[in-house]
Length: 396
Image (cartoon, rainbow, N blue to C red):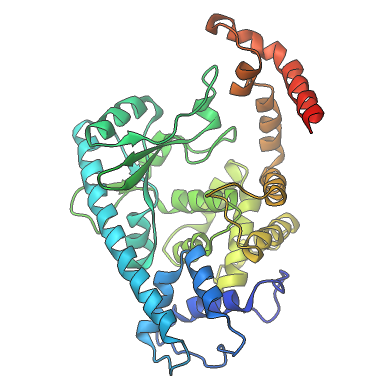
């Protein structure tokens, strides 16, 4: 770990610090296992639990294959990592094949398509399909092609996995993707029409399409985001999830090692109000993964808001927060809600406040009205909100 960290990392468990050191060592040309890392106090079951939670087990196993463990690592740990590595490799190969099928079908139907994560990140950032995990395919299409894309996925055997509750077309900007599941292949596809949920502004699909790149490892013409757009997406996506998985920070570390323009990245972040969020991401990557950055970006990283947001994100890592399954504990849910608000720029906060005045589906549930009268939810919304709060207070 950094000898003089600007962040308070004292509550991070020793097992996670060991994982971070191994990941950093794995980037070296001649990686060596430092037996000073290994202590009798390491809880190897917790080590595995953390490796799985942060989705870094493929990197750990890849490292252990390169070095002599000197019997310092228990055999059951190596065996478990090996088994998970094989399962992940098979899953990534399956997802890659599905990318070909989905990409080919949409291309033949003249639907422009950008792949966001999944196998494309594994091949482009890690150079090896087996070194990154992914549970689904994320793709971005123009909003006007959503309906056609859905019909094509239905033809492939996919079923809609979630149905967005919406009123007065708020789904277009409040949400950003729909989920589909193929029960035969057991593959999930998320179809995005935005990079992130609104109401914040972001690059349009046409802008992203102009800067697209061809996926080099694929024989067919499949496309993904340009370098600076990809960094923008990874930063905003990871921040929105509290950087609760190290995998997202490792993505940041890997893309920073690539050839891209810092000036263009800063301009893009600044244009949409995410400079401080970019500073958070790079600061966390520097502190936890030893990422090297040019001096011109350090001013942003060391800015007060970026440092504060970085420390706030350590909370998610300390507590091994899981935001994606089951019910989130109330204390964590409240913390996350406050953190999401602190990530916003002043302009984004203004848009968020304005968006709260726009009717929600819950307003329709509170007072059902015919569709031709839905416009009345605008003046009625404050009263319906007070009614729900009052009713909730009485029940508690």
